[in-house]
Image 1 (tube, rainbow, N blue to C red):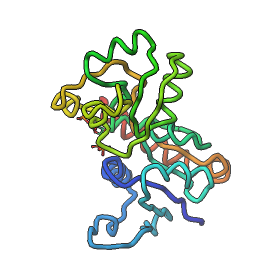
Image 2: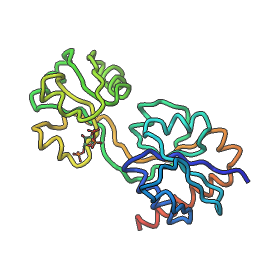
Image 3: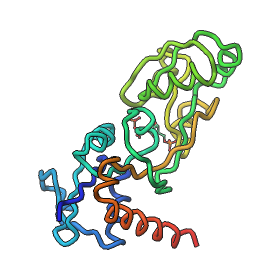
Length: 216
Ligand code: PRP
C-alpha cells in the first residue's frame, strides 16, 4: 500500500489537526519532538505520512499531488487560488477576514475614494474591492503586523484576519466591513481523490463523525 501524504501548515492549525488525527487513531509520536529537525513523519501502521510546511505552501503541495491531503485556513485557500477539492470545514480556527481601520476611514469606503489598503492577502483584497465593492484602490502587500499600516499613515485601511478583536481594540482600530468568514478546511488533490477514494473517504468520514460528536 502506498503512503497517503498529509500536508500541515506550521502554526496554530497544525496542533489542533494533530489532535483530531490522534483521536481517530492516526498517530505519530515523533512529530511532537520539538528538538527534531526531521521534516517528514510517518505512521507505519496506517501508511500515512505527514509534513509541516509554510502555511501558504500547503495548497501548492496538494495541487501538484506531492501531498494527497492538506489542512489549511480558508484565507490561504482563497489567497493562493490553487486547484484542490475543499472537502470539509473543520470548524476550528474560526475567524473573519475584514476591512479594518480607524473609525474615520468609514467615510472613504462610503465614498469609494481611491484609498490605500495594506494586507498580507493581496488577492483577497483585490477581489473584494474590485469585484464586490467596485472600488479602485491601491493595495500594499505587507508580511505581518498589518495593523501598523494605518497607525503610521502608510495606508487608510487594512484587510486582515480578526479573531478576538483584541489587536484592533488595543490599537484604536475597528472592523469597517466583513469580507468573509474563515476556518480550517481539509483539501484533497483531485487525482488522489479518484485513485485513493476509499481511504480518503474513510478518513473524511472519521473526522466528520468526530466533529459531529463534539457538536452534540
Ligand atoms: C493575526 C491577524 C491579526 C491578529 C488578530 O496576526 O493578522 O493581527 O492575529 O487576532 P485578534 O483579533 O484575536 O487580536 P498573527 O498573530 O497571525 O500575526 P501577524 O500579524 O504577524 O500576521
